Image (tube, rainbow, N blue to C red; front, side, top):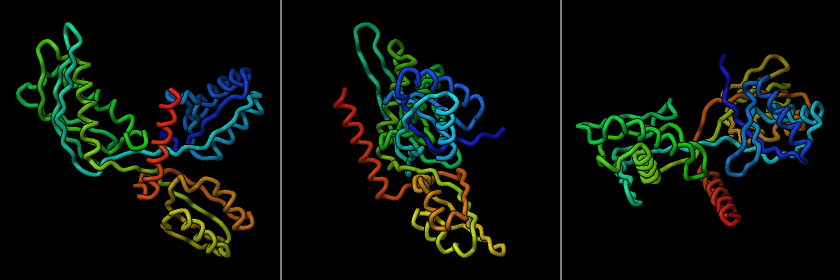
Length: 300
């Protein structure tokens, strides 16, 4: 069965100890019932995050927690599942060297990273002549996989990237699995900034249906949300508008649409693809992330 990836997340906090226990029971049941509803605890903020297919989807489950489980919860702002990606090829040549008395750590990894389409991540081994022994090649892959979990721009996973290793060096005593993992992570960080990273946002396929008399209002509301209208069809007094709109612009759209069409129009949306975030919004997101990191550093 195809299960689409959740595109919207919400932080939820129980108001007291009893609600906390009931919330855990509710989340356990809901995740078993619905594969498109996911939950996890954020390791940094320690918040419980719920993920789903839209605002209404999550609202229904929050209401069920209150009614069926008597769990009083507070919700934080929905967070869009952004991604990071690189836009050009960049080379790396990184040596991880550590001496701590006794056996140290040593590993050198060289190669390049480049953008790819249609795959989140790809690892290519072009090592010749055993400059890195076969035993340590999977360690390099493991290091790159660890590095792509969090990008340096806004802390979201990195996608559409190919990491190629074509040279390196090892030490007969000091080289180990962990040494080559750390070398790969260091190499990735060294090259990532040079590869001109960008932020990607989820683009939703939105279908709005309503009376033809309100078609102009529907067009305007989509254009205001950085939407691109793909098609519009009229069937007598009713019309349907198909568009691609960034998810971050769709919060609260149901209320806006109701007021624009006297409550006569409705819309559905599903995830379509990831698209590049415009420069102005990208800069604001990076600034927001840096501010958040400063606050967290201040608290610790």
